[in-house]
Length: 203
Image (cartoon, rainbow, N blue to C red):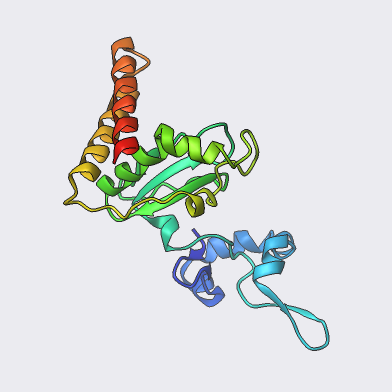
């Protein structure tokens, strides 16, 4: 990735030239295209007092990429759909999984916290709330804005209910991997979903 997640802009050009010369040469082939991106102009360009536009970051800078993008644990779900279908992803071979821009991601500090949030987002009460105000099937149905309208409590590893929800999500993920091969696993997974809904509704 050519982005500095801490500065939230492209790696400095001097560093790219010295440490990644072949990558820099490759990017230069598309410099005009990259400079003319609407988001680059909006977030990484400024106008001087004479109205002339000048860049404030390397031309290959990417908007919307930060430390959270590289988090080893994430809860993810598609922005487009009729209901929230969240999953947990974890780093593989010590490399973080980076979803596409049409996927909402929530970074977490631990795998158990990710499963706790995932269980809540997949529950019927949360889905009912989101479906009550967001347009189903729309491009922004499950955008990050849903987290502004859904109160997700901070994960507490000492909370029995929080741990129970995380456990149910972990078990559902394990069963989901085998679901196509075993119909019984599908039934068990739906049973776990029912248990999760009950806990969320009465907690």
